[in-house]
Length: 118
Image 1: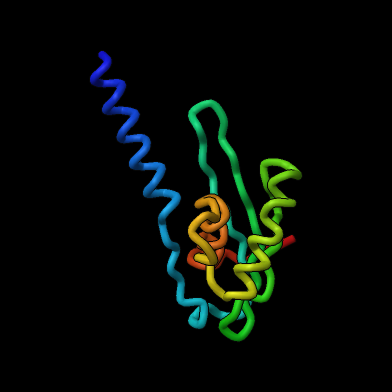
Image 2 (image 1 turned 90 degrees about the vertical axis):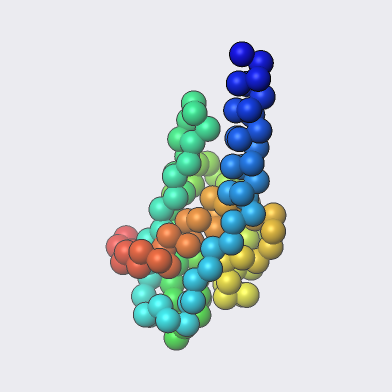
C-alpha cells in the first residue's frame, strides 16, 4: 500500500513538472488576422477551472489578449501583466514560471483559431 502511494505521488510530481515546463510553440506569423477564442480547463480532482481569452492577431503579431472568463477576479489581475508580456514579446513562452493554464489558453486560441464572438 505504501509503495503504491509513493509511486503515485512520484508520477503525479513528474506530470506536474512536465506540465509547468511545457513550451507552447506557435508560429504567430502564419496566423491570419482575427480575434480568436481560447479555452483551457484543468482540475485538481475536486474542482474544475476554466480559463477563456480572446487573442487578437494582426499582421503576424499578437496585438491584444483579453481575459473573457477566469476562475475569479484575483486571477484576472494576475494574468493581465502576463498577457501584456506575451503581446510585447509576441510569444507565449515569456518566462519559465508562467502557469501552464495561462500559456495553454492562449495556445488554444492560436491553434484552434475559433473566431471570438462577443
